[in-house]
Image (tube, rainbow, N blue to C red; front, top):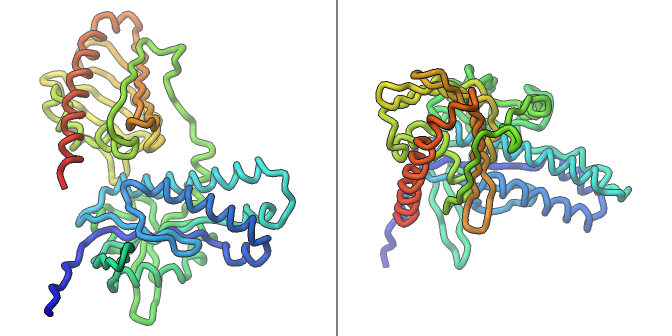
Length: 357
Protein backbone atom coordinates (compact mmCIF):
# COMPACT_ATOMS: atom_id res chain seq x y z
CA UNK A 1 0.00 0.00 0.00
CA UNK A 2 1.42 3.35 -1.03
CA UNK A 3 1.31 6.07 1.64
CA UNK A 4 1.01 9.71 0.71
CA UNK A 5 3.91 11.81 1.90
CA UNK A 6 2.85 14.32 4.54
CA UNK A 7 3.30 17.94 3.52
CA UNK A 8 5.78 19.90 5.62
CA UNK A 9 4.56 22.94 7.54
CA UNK A 10 6.53 26.13 8.00
CA UNK A 11 6.64 27.91 11.29
CA UNK A 12 8.48 29.36 14.24
CA UNK A 13 10.18 26.81 16.49
CA UNK A 14 10.90 27.80 20.09
CA UNK A 15 12.89 25.89 22.68
CA UNK A 16 12.88 27.19 26.27
CA UNK A 17 15.50 25.55 28.47
CA UNK A 18 15.99 25.90 32.23
CA UNK A 19 19.73 26.37 32.61
CA UNK A 20 21.70 25.02 35.53
CA UNK A 21 19.13 22.32 36.27
CA UNK A 22 21.49 19.34 35.94
CA UNK A 23 23.85 20.76 38.57
CA UNK A 24 20.89 21.82 40.66
CA UNK A 25 19.43 18.30 40.56
CA UNK A 26 22.74 16.68 41.50
CA UNK A 27 23.05 18.86 44.58
CA UNK A 28 19.41 18.72 45.70
CA UNK A 29 16.87 16.41 47.25
CA UNK A 30 15.08 14.69 44.35
CA UNK A 31 11.51 15.11 45.61
CA UNK A 32 11.82 18.84 46.24
CA UNK A 33 13.80 19.40 43.04
CA UNK A 34 11.08 17.77 40.93
CA UNK A 35 8.42 19.94 42.58
CA UNK A 36 10.44 23.05 41.72
CA UNK A 37 10.91 21.88 38.11
CA UNK A 38 7.19 21.23 37.69
CA UNK A 39 6.35 24.68 39.04
CA UNK A 40 8.82 26.43 36.73
CA UNK A 41 7.78 24.46 33.65
CA UNK A 42 4.16 25.42 34.29
CA UNK A 43 5.25 29.06 34.44
CA UNK A 44 7.03 28.70 31.09
CA UNK A 45 4.09 26.96 29.41
CA UNK A 46 1.64 29.58 30.66
CA UNK A 47 3.99 32.24 29.28
CA UNK A 48 4.41 30.91 25.74
CA UNK A 49 0.87 29.63 25.11
CA UNK A 50 -0.55 31.32 23.08
CA UNK A 51 0.71 32.32 20.52
CA UNK A 52 2.93 29.22 20.60
CA UNK A 53 1.60 25.69 20.97
CA UNK A 54 3.47 23.29 23.21
CA UNK A 55 4.80 20.29 21.29
CA UNK A 56 6.27 18.45 24.26
CA UNK A 57 8.25 18.73 27.47
CA UNK A 58 11.84 17.53 27.25
CA UNK A 59 13.11 17.11 30.79
CA UNK A 60 13.94 20.65 31.89
CA UNK A 61 12.94 22.22 28.54
CA UNK A 62 9.72 23.06 26.69
CA UNK A 63 9.55 22.74 22.89
CA UNK A 64 6.83 24.76 21.14
CA UNK A 65 5.89 25.93 17.68
CA UNK A 66 3.79 28.48 15.81
CA UNK A 67 2.64 27.58 12.31
CA UNK A 68 3.17 30.67 10.17
CA UNK A 69 5.37 31.83 7.30
CA UNK A 70 5.77 35.28 8.87
CA UNK A 71 6.35 36.20 12.50
CA UNK A 72 4.80 39.13 14.35
CA UNK A 73 7.96 40.60 15.85
CA UNK A 74 6.22 42.48 18.69
CA UNK A 75 4.20 39.40 19.65
CA UNK A 76 7.18 37.00 19.69
CA UNK A 77 9.54 39.41 21.43
CA UNK A 78 6.94 40.33 24.06
CA UNK A 79 6.01 36.67 24.60
CA UNK A 80 9.62 35.66 25.24
CA UNK A 81 10.43 38.59 27.51
CA UNK A 82 7.18 38.28 29.46
CA UNK A 83 7.81 34.57 29.95
CA UNK A 84 11.33 35.29 31.18
CA UNK A 85 10.09 37.99 33.56
CA UNK A 86 7.41 35.63 34.92
CA UNK A 87 10.10 32.97 35.38
CA UNK A 88 12.35 35.33 37.33
CA UNK A 89 9.44 36.56 39.45
CA UNK A 90 8.49 32.97 40.21
CA UNK A 91 12.07 32.17 41.30
CA UNK A 92 12.04 35.26 43.54
CA UNK A 93 8.62 34.49 45.03
CA UNK A 94 9.49 30.86 45.80
CA UNK A 95 12.72 31.90 47.52
CA UNK A 96 10.95 34.57 49.58
CA UNK A 97 8.06 32.29 50.51
CA UNK A 98 10.03 29.29 51.73
CA UNK A 99 11.60 28.78 55.13
CA UNK A 100 13.04 25.42 54.09
CA UNK A 101 16.83 25.14 54.22
CA UNK A 102 17.17 22.02 52.05
CA UNK A 103 19.48 22.25 49.04
CA UNK A 104 16.57 22.16 46.60
CA UNK A 105 15.27 25.42 48.06
CA UNK A 106 18.62 27.05 48.80
CA UNK A 107 19.90 26.48 45.26
CA UNK A 108 16.83 27.83 43.42
CA UNK A 109 18.58 31.16 42.56
CA UNK A 110 21.16 29.18 40.56
CA UNK A 111 18.54 28.41 37.89
CA UNK A 112 17.94 30.56 34.83
CA UNK A 113 16.20 30.40 31.45
CA UNK A 114 17.33 30.61 27.84
CA UNK A 115 15.50 30.43 24.50
CA UNK A 116 16.38 29.41 20.97
CA UNK A 117 14.07 30.60 18.17
CA UNK A 118 14.26 29.37 14.57
CA UNK A 119 12.04 29.65 11.51
CA UNK A 120 11.93 26.48 9.46
CA UNK A 121 10.03 23.48 8.17
CA UNK A 122 8.76 20.47 10.08
CA UNK A 123 6.39 17.55 9.78
CA UNK A 124 3.95 16.71 12.56
CA UNK A 125 4.18 12.95 13.01
CA UNK A 126 1.32 11.32 14.91
CA UNK A 127 2.03 8.05 16.69
CA UNK A 128 -0.85 6.62 18.69
CA UNK A 129 -2.24 9.44 20.82
CA UNK A 130 0.94 11.50 20.67
CA UNK A 131 2.43 13.79 18.06
CA UNK A 132 5.98 14.83 17.43
CA UNK A 133 7.66 17.42 15.22
CA UNK A 134 10.39 16.07 12.98
CA UNK A 135 12.77 17.47 10.37
CA UNK A 136 16.22 18.96 9.99
CA UNK A 137 15.11 22.35 11.34
CA UNK A 138 13.78 20.67 14.49
CA UNK A 139 17.15 19.00 14.93
CA UNK A 140 18.95 22.31 14.40
CA UNK A 141 17.04 24.22 17.07
CA UNK A 142 17.84 21.47 19.58
CA UNK A 143 21.52 21.35 18.65
CA UNK A 144 21.79 25.09 19.19
CA UNK A 145 21.11 24.61 22.90
CA UNK A 146 24.75 23.56 23.23
CA UNK A 147 26.57 26.73 22.29
CA UNK A 148 29.13 29.37 23.23
CA UNK A 149 26.64 32.21 23.74
CA UNK A 150 27.48 32.51 27.43
CA UNK A 151 30.87 33.86 26.30
CA UNK A 152 29.00 36.67 24.52
CA UNK A 153 26.42 37.72 27.13
CA UNK A 154 28.18 36.50 30.27
CA UNK A 155 25.25 34.49 31.56
CA UNK A 156 22.81 31.75 30.54
CA UNK A 157 19.91 34.18 30.28
CA UNK A 158 19.28 35.00 26.65
CA UNK A 159 17.24 34.42 23.53
CA UNK A 160 19.08 33.36 20.38
CA UNK A 161 17.34 34.05 17.07
CA UNK A 162 18.59 32.35 13.94
CA UNK A 163 18.91 34.50 10.84
CA UNK A 164 15.85 32.77 9.34
CA UNK A 165 13.80 33.78 12.40
CA UNK A 166 15.00 37.38 12.09
CA UNK A 167 14.12 37.38 8.39
CA UNK A 168 10.63 36.04 9.12
CA UNK A 169 10.12 38.81 11.70
CA UNK A 170 11.22 41.36 9.09
CA UNK A 171 13.24 43.38 11.60
CA UNK A 172 16.60 45.09 11.75
CA UNK A 173 18.20 43.17 14.64
CA UNK A 174 20.94 45.72 15.24
CA UNK A 175 18.34 48.45 15.84
CA UNK A 176 16.71 46.20 18.41
CA UNK A 177 20.00 45.98 20.26
CA UNK A 178 20.59 42.33 19.36
CA UNK A 179 24.19 41.13 19.19
CA UNK A 180 25.41 39.19 16.18
CA UNK A 181 27.07 35.84 16.86
CA UNK A 182 28.13 32.83 14.80
CA UNK A 183 27.83 29.36 16.26
CA UNK A 184 29.99 26.65 14.66
CA UNK A 185 28.39 23.21 14.43
CA UNK A 186 29.81 20.15 12.71
CA UNK A 187 27.23 20.72 9.98
CA UNK A 188 28.43 24.30 9.39
CA UNK A 189 28.20 27.80 10.81
CA UNK A 190 24.87 29.19 12.03
CA UNK A 191 24.36 32.95 12.21
CA UNK A 192 22.53 34.08 15.34
CA UNK A 193 21.28 37.29 16.92
CA UNK A 194 21.34 37.41 20.71
CA UNK A 195 19.29 39.37 23.25
CA UNK A 196 20.58 39.51 26.82
CA UNK A 197 17.53 38.76 28.97
CA UNK A 198 19.35 39.50 32.22
CA UNK A 199 19.80 43.10 31.05
CA UNK A 200 16.13 43.30 30.11
CA UNK A 201 15.16 41.99 33.55
CA UNK A 202 17.29 44.58 35.30
CA UNK A 203 15.70 47.35 33.23
CA UNK A 204 12.26 45.98 34.07
CA UNK A 205 12.97 46.33 37.79
CA UNK A 206 13.54 50.08 37.60
CA UNK A 207 10.95 50.97 34.97
CA UNK A 208 8.54 53.73 35.96
CA UNK A 209 4.90 52.69 35.72
CA UNK A 210 2.05 54.97 34.71
CA UNK A 211 -1.48 53.76 35.25
CA UNK A 212 -4.63 55.79 35.74
CA UNK A 213 -5.99 54.89 39.18
CA UNK A 214 -9.68 54.60 39.99
CA UNK A 215 -9.38 57.63 42.26
CA UNK A 216 -8.07 59.95 39.55
CA UNK A 217 -10.05 58.55 36.60
CA UNK A 218 -12.66 60.75 34.95
CA UNK A 219 -14.44 57.67 33.61
CA UNK A 220 -14.12 53.89 33.96
CA UNK A 221 -15.49 51.26 31.57
CA UNK A 222 -15.53 47.52 32.22
CA UNK A 223 -16.68 44.73 29.92
CA UNK A 224 -15.83 41.15 28.99
CA UNK A 225 -14.48 39.69 25.75
CA UNK A 226 -14.76 36.01 24.74
CA UNK A 227 -11.03 35.33 24.24
CA UNK A 228 -7.96 35.14 26.48
CA UNK A 229 -5.86 38.24 27.27
CA UNK A 230 -3.07 37.00 24.97
CA UNK A 231 -5.49 36.51 22.10
CA UNK A 232 -7.12 39.89 22.68
CA UNK A 233 -3.89 41.90 23.15
CA UNK A 234 -2.88 42.22 19.46
CA UNK A 235 -6.39 43.25 18.47
CA UNK A 236 -6.15 46.19 20.87
CA UNK A 237 -2.55 47.21 20.14
CA UNK A 238 -1.69 46.29 16.53
CA UNK A 239 -2.70 49.13 14.14
CA UNK A 240 -3.38 46.77 11.24
CA UNK A 241 -5.87 44.84 13.39
CA UNK A 242 -7.43 47.92 14.96
CA UNK A 243 -8.41 49.14 11.49
CA UNK A 244 -10.60 46.07 11.11
CA UNK A 245 -12.91 46.87 14.03
CA UNK A 246 -12.51 50.54 15.01
CA UNK A 247 -15.04 51.86 12.54
CA UNK A 248 -14.32 55.55 13.03
CA UNK A 249 -10.69 55.14 11.95
CA UNK A 250 -9.93 56.11 8.36
CA UNK A 251 -6.17 55.50 8.67
CA UNK A 252 -3.58 54.72 11.30
CA UNK A 253 0.21 55.01 11.28
CA UNK A 254 2.86 54.11 13.82
CA UNK A 255 6.50 55.07 14.33
CA UNK A 256 7.41 51.66 15.76
CA UNK A 257 10.73 50.14 14.67
CA UNK A 258 10.07 46.41 15.08
CA UNK A 259 9.24 46.82 18.75
CA UNK A 260 6.08 48.36 20.12
CA UNK A 261 6.37 49.78 23.62
CA UNK A 262 6.94 52.89 25.74
CA UNK A 263 7.56 55.85 23.44
CA UNK A 264 5.76 54.41 20.42
CA UNK A 265 3.62 57.09 18.76
CA UNK A 266 0.52 56.27 16.74
CA UNK A 267 -1.45 58.74 14.63
CA UNK A 268 -5.11 57.73 14.35
CA UNK A 269 -7.10 59.62 11.71
CA UNK A 270 -10.83 60.02 12.30
CA UNK A 271 -11.63 61.97 9.16
CA UNK A 272 -9.99 65.37 9.55
CA UNK A 273 -9.29 64.83 13.24
CA UNK A 274 -5.99 63.08 13.93
CA UNK A 275 -5.40 61.76 17.45
CA UNK A 276 -1.78 61.37 18.53
CA UNK A 277 -1.38 58.41 20.90
CA UNK A 278 1.88 57.96 22.80
CA UNK A 279 2.45 54.78 24.81
CA UNK A 280 3.63 55.75 28.31
CA UNK A 281 3.36 52.34 29.98
CA UNK A 282 3.60 48.88 28.41
CA UNK A 283 3.15 45.57 30.23
CA UNK A 284 2.42 43.05 27.46
CA UNK A 285 -0.76 40.98 27.75
CA UNK A 286 -1.71 42.73 30.98
CA UNK A 287 -1.94 46.52 30.74
CA UNK A 288 -0.89 49.52 28.71
CA UNK A 289 -1.38 53.28 29.05
CA UNK A 290 -1.47 55.87 26.30
CA UNK A 291 -1.44 59.64 26.30
CA UNK A 292 -3.93 60.78 23.65
CA UNK A 293 -3.99 64.25 22.19
CA UNK A 294 -6.69 65.25 19.73
CA UNK A 295 -5.79 67.36 16.72
CA UNK A 296 -8.99 69.37 17.07
CA UNK A 297 -9.70 71.18 20.31
CA UNK A 298 -7.62 71.29 23.45
CA UNK A 299 -8.51 67.94 24.99
CA UNK A 300 -6.08 65.26 26.08
CA UNK A 301 -6.74 61.87 27.61
CA UNK A 302 -4.56 59.46 29.55
CA UNK A 303 -6.05 56.01 29.11
CA UNK A 304 -5.06 52.80 30.93
CA UNK A 305 -6.36 49.49 29.57
CA UNK A 306 -6.07 46.43 31.83
CA UNK A 307 -6.77 42.83 30.80
CA UNK A 308 -7.63 40.19 33.39
CA UNK A 309 -8.29 36.53 32.63
CA UNK A 310 -11.74 35.28 33.68
CA UNK A 311 -13.66 32.07 32.99
CA UNK A 312 -15.46 33.60 30.00
CA UNK A 313 -12.28 35.06 28.47
CA UNK A 314 -11.00 38.50 29.44
CA UNK A 315 -12.26 41.24 31.69
CA UNK A 316 -11.28 44.59 30.18
CA UNK A 317 -11.04 47.69 32.34
CA UNK A 318 -10.46 51.09 30.77
CA UNK A 319 -9.68 54.04 33.06
CA UNK A 320 -9.61 57.43 31.35
CA UNK A 321 -8.31 60.70 32.77
CA UNK A 322 -9.54 63.78 30.89
CA UNK A 323 -7.61 67.03 30.87
CA UNK A 324 -9.28 69.37 31.46
CA UNK A 325 -11.78 67.27 33.46
CA UNK A 326 -14.80 69.26 32.26
CA UNK A 327 -14.03 68.30 28.65
CA UNK A 328 -15.36 64.80 29.29
CA UNK A 329 -18.88 66.22 29.49
CA UNK A 330 -18.44 67.26 25.85
CA UNK A 331 -16.63 64.27 24.34
CA UNK A 332 -17.45 61.44 26.76
CA UNK A 333 -20.84 60.41 25.36
CA UNK A 334 -19.50 60.13 21.80
CA UNK A 335 -16.47 58.13 22.95
CA UNK A 336 -18.65 55.70 24.92
CA UNK A 337 -21.08 55.20 22.02
CA UNK A 338 -18.25 54.62 19.54
CA UNK A 339 -16.52 52.19 21.89
CA UNK A 340 -19.72 50.17 22.38
CA UNK A 341 -20.30 49.93 18.62
CA UNK A 342 -16.68 48.97 17.92
CA UNK A 343 -16.67 46.36 20.67
CA UNK A 344 -19.69 44.62 19.13
CA UNK A 345 -17.92 44.41 15.77
CA UNK A 346 -14.75 43.05 17.39
CA UNK A 347 -16.76 40.32 19.11
CA UNK A 348 -18.20 39.32 15.73
CA UNK A 349 -14.73 39.21 14.16
CA UNK A 350 -13.31 37.12 17.01
CA UNK A 351 -16.22 34.68 16.79
CA UNK A 352 -15.75 34.31 13.03
CA UNK A 353 -12.01 33.81 13.44
CA UNK A 354 -12.53 31.05 16.01
CA UNK A 355 -15.05 29.27 13.79
CA UNK A 356 -12.67 29.24 10.83
CA UNK A 357 -10.59 26.02 10.78
